[in-house]
Length: 504
Image (tube, rainbow, N blue to C red):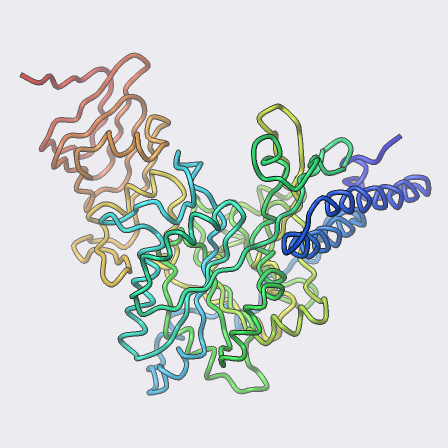
């Protein structure tokens, strides 16, 4: 008889199963030690730190008893803990902006690959606006800050083993920019066989068959990896006090001077150690994590933690009105303190995967925002939607490449010519999923200033200088093709069937 994920999910163990759990943990430790014995030199030291982190999360995973939250204990956060951005923005910026900026570090989460959009290598190297990549735009933003205020705000990239090599190669192009760039790697954990609950890795190799045996354990790993890298101590020694953390694919996540001044101006005894930017939920955001009050602390509630009976309630835009943008402002000394005290108790996210060969595995992950409950005087700030502009799909890419946005010093801002602040709802079909396919289907990006909704499905191409207004739905059925001619104006139109524009 062996221990399974189902046993753990039930939360209550018999005495025999408890003994089995202890035996299982010993077996896991032996397997990890055998893997470690295969590594030498600096790699062995890195692997040891990673494996120590994995042992800790695996131990907590085996210890889990029932759900991580009791639904009846969930409360709405007090009004003063979710502060409106407009109230913060209303305070005039004092003369000390330069001094405040010199205490700031910008950290971008750069562990993801562009595979979901059909690209190889780091997602941050995909071109998103005027041939600028996510990374280009980030460097331009920080360089503009440093030049404007005569400051020294560094950029830190948290890479994964998937993105580190390619990212470091490209960093050479920024040598002459006024931005110091540092990198560190998040941990590398072994994937676990869902049935045996043991690692599938046979060695520490990252090539060929063994590449699928490892994973980066979610962005909650930032605290331990940042600390273990030595970079946290280096930045503290330079007088840095706060990091602004965000996903590198969120083009709205720029340094906000009002939020920074709000942090820096608070009295020492009420100094805020953690701000999470939240924004109003729409029906497109129903799965996003939200802030709750739980046992007298602000806490991030993710959909994975919600009991099945309450999932619809969680998705409601009336009960849970805000969601986490993953734009976070965090105290560096507080991270150091919590790491030294081993007090960062983040909820475990069990992420099931099926590998190419059909093997079912699980990944144990954590989320960076889940740490909000560990910090003193934590706050949420309800920011405008413009600070949440993620590019996860080519539908998002179409929006940011269009004339809806203008580019200034690396920052995208909504065009003043658009009469309403909300972005159009765009849904492109599977023919557009890969960036390369997407680009070949547009001779240039249509005028979308007056667009509300766009749905495109099937084999569809767009000629030059097309204008889309109101609600536009274009559906080419299987075997059909639709070519939208150059200069076409589609306003509140449904186009279906077969439309070919032939060259003469």
